[in-house]
Length: 502
Ligand code: NAD
Image 1 (spheres, rainbow, N blue to C red):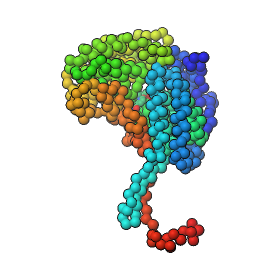
Image 2 (tube, helix red, strand yellow):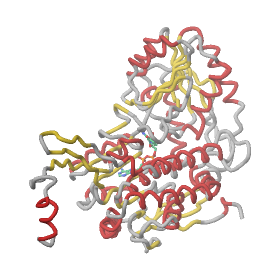
Image 3 (tube, protein in one colour):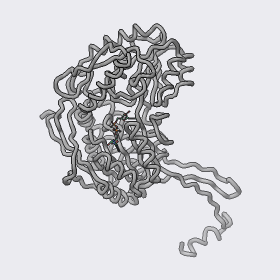
Image 4 (cartoon, rainbow, N blue to C red):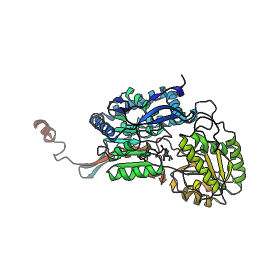
């Protein structure tokens, strides 16, 4: 049977037991390529969150006192299991999210890289020390896990985003609750099954499926110390404010509006395929998608012409069909939203040079590749995240204007520049307001050992996910200052503890 013809049971994982919906309300999970329902996500309640917190709390003392090298070994085994099940995980991502095998495989690979990073936890947890800060006194810092922590994740990376935090948080000694997107819950279940197979004790990793109620249950729960969120800007802001008001440490990674600046000297034969893949890969549903092309000077006509030609030739189809280049968006309602952005741009005076509004396939949630030219900074499409296969083109006269346009956005996730000119790169890097920068790279994703680094309205909090930031986010320091009072080197100092029976 093809993967898309199966039906999946979406279960919670609480204290090592897989639970079905138990009569909870549900929300359908679709295969976006066909529009068929492939499962039902139970909308868990605050009471379910409560039970998950109790299970995690019960598991925490045993897990946090397990030596860090043993905790790391679970992740060495997990890494091998993820490799063994790589294709299965990739296909699950394609099924529930819609993206093609190349993107889905890339997502699983990026997730595995965080597991590899977490395998180094014995080194990552090292504290600092200064001996003899005064005579005979040493000052040392130690890292401790926080307790029960939670992550709330989006639909667009159902495997990678949970893996941004779970290996780091758990290898650092925390017990963890995952609330996956209700639209893409299947990958998380497989991640949980494989974690158990790797030997993680019951209750250390839990899954509570659902939506708003489950999220608010997490944010308000006094037993949860820290929350990592990834999703859209309004929800990120809510999670940050509400979580902080309930005394939690919060990191909230939010939406984006990323510019790709094309300079007149850009190497277009290589830049254009990269720009097309940034704008239309994963149907534009990436927080690192290049969604605005800022063309500097006289390069505009040529670059728009080449992109139009390449985008119009893209093969539209399901991610699990060989050769598909433009895959569906996540839901029909989301397709309507993308369409309304194109309508509004046209009404505001943009020119639609490639129009994908007419569904390119009968079934599924497909939206054709779209290019909006002559976009200006005031238009909605220049300011708001569309999250679909729509590229807006802004024409400017200089690099300074390109940077000023980019900085006019409330978001600050990523920005790319296409040029061979080092001075231009330097000016841009020093002045542009974005946390992730790409030079001739359209999807500026940092490796697992660096932070995923949005700024402005693309991020709420202090410490980012992944890299050493992730380790700091999921641990706290104790700083110890110590001296010993008996005379060193004397028989007295060695004898006394034994004599007292200590
Ligand atoms: P979303 O905000 O709709 O959902 C994210 C999570 O929040 C889900 O688990 C969902 O159940 C929950 N949620 C949704 N509405 C809620 C509400 N009203 N109250 C409480 N919880 C709620 O985001 P999405 O559509 O799943 O994901 C796409 C968004 O995520 C885009 O904006 C994208 O840019 C962003 N994203 C950002 C990054 C990043 O690193 N900055 C990475 C991936 C995705």
